[in-house]
Length: 103
Image 1: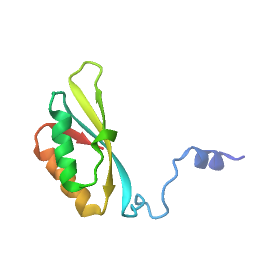
Image 2: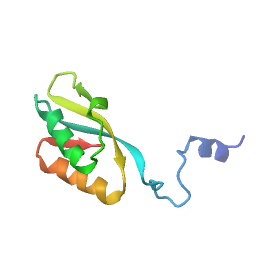
Image 3: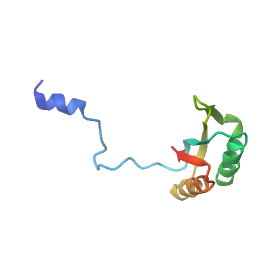
Image 4: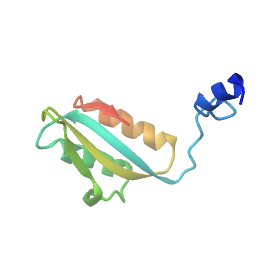
């Protein structure tokens, strides 16, 4: 193997177009919502998510506290129907002022 082929093996693979792959809707879409720890944080996230996915299963939601207890992450899966739905969900979550990150 020559030096060029070794370099090519170390490079992360990228889509040919250079853009991330598009999502095919509808699909199951996992989310992690991170915010300040509070007794009602997960409930507020659940209310918001339910408005954007009426069939959302809150029983499958997981709440994980950070090591020092300052933050919580709420892990869930929604039925994503399109980019507009996801964008509206992200905007509403961030508008609470309690959500630091949605991934």
